[in-house]
Amino acid sequence: MQKELIDQSEIKLVGLTARTNNKNEFDPKTAKIGELFGQFFGQNRASQIHHRKQPGVTFCVYTEYASDEHGDYTYLIGEEVSSFENVPTDMRMLIIPAAKYAKFITSSGQMPDVVIDAWKKIWAMSSTDFGGQRIYIADFEVYDQRAADPAFASLDIYIGIQ
Image (cartoon, rainbow, N blue to C red; front, side):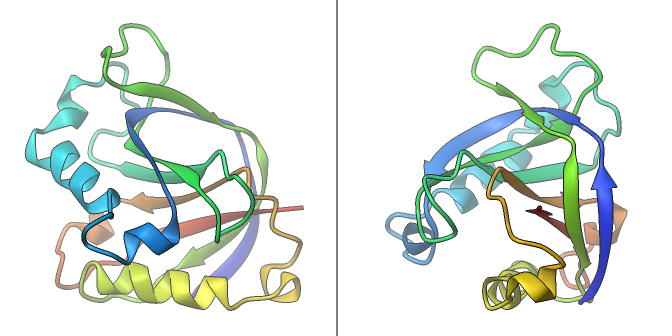
């Protein structure tokens, strides 16, 4: 994975959410993210989001951490918006605050393996590897045109750091 340190400005998002944790996500009986992904794409929920800044660019955010990657967190799948006007009642608004991030660009691979492999590498990293201490406010994935083919997908993963 390639890494760069960036200062990211605030991002406004609208999407579907679920409260979960990594332990539950590795058990098909308790996993919620795959089901949320299926609902978002299967029901074309992005088309119901108003004021989309980049239609077709999907954000998956891990936020409201109870502790760290071992605790509960809120997962949001949605799109960036320019305004929070007319948000569908079953969707949530979220602001990712401006912060410093370690941005990782994954190599191309089969979905969801490319994402799972990237996160396993990230979880094994130290503060030195990140370029700062993780802050556990909001980490996120960005799926753009590079992720259109699930057999050869690549994406960006942003890890918030101090």
